[in-house]
Length: 310
Ligand code: CP
Image 1 (cartoon, rainbow, N blue to C red):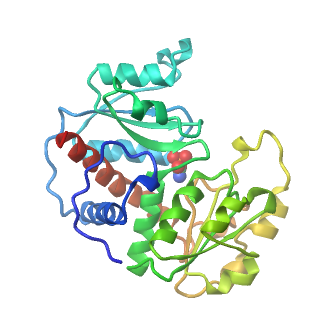
Image 2 (tube, rainbow, N blue to C red):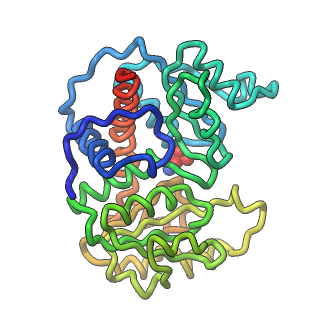
C-alpha cells in the first residue's frame, strides 16, 4: 500500500481508530508534500487555534505551534499556570470558553484517558479537538509522524518486521501504533518487562525476548519508561533495565544493516537506549522530531478542510 493523494477532511482527530487507511495514507502524502515544500501556503490568519497542554511536552506542543504558524493560523497563548485552571476551571469549561471566543481548533494534551469524549459529544463545544496525547490512551500525531518516518525509509508497511519495546501498558504511542501498523500489514513483535505487558497486545503481535528477534527486525521502536505513570513504584534500576531490555551497544551490532531505530522521545539515555546510540547511523529519532512538524501541518489542514465542509 503506498501513500495516496486523498484530500482528508476531519471534524476532530482524537484516535487513530477513527481514520481509514486512505485517510492515514492521505495525511502521510500531504505531510511529505509539506516537507518537500510543494504546497503553496494560504492566508489562514482568521483561523484561531489554541494549544492546551495539561501535561508537559516539548515536541508535540512546539511542533504543533510551528506547524500552525507555518500554515499562517493565529495561535493563542495558553498556559495552565496563568489561566483560570488554577482557580479550578474544568477542562470542559476551558474548551467551552475557547469555543465561545471563536477558537476553531484546540490541540489538547491531558493526563486523563479519553478526556476528549465529553468535548466531542458536546453540542455547545464548537472547536475541533486534536488529541496531543491522552493519559495512556492515544497519541495520533506521534503515530502519524512515526508512520511517515517508516514510510520514508521503506516505501511500504506490508511485511515489515517491527518490534515495539518497553513500557507498553503505559504507552499511548504503543497503543496508537500497534493498531494501525497491523492494519497496514506490518508483522508486530513486543518485548519488555512482563509487568508492562497486557493480553490486549496479543491481538496485534507476538511477545518475544529481544535477543530472539533483534537480527530480523526492520524497525525497532523503543518506548520511554514512563516514571510519571508508575505511582512511585520503580521495579528496575536504570542499569538493570538497560541490560535486560534496552538497546545496548552490543545489541545495536546485531541489527540488520537496513534496520532503523525509533523512539518518540524524550529519551532516558542509557535506559531505553545507550547514550552514544541516540544519534547513531541507524537512529531516526531526530528525523521523527522533524517529521512531526509536517505531519501536524497535514492534520491541521485536514481539520480546516473538515470545518469548511460543515
Ligand atoms: N514524543 C512526545 O510526545 O514528546 P513530548 O512529550 O515532548 O511532546
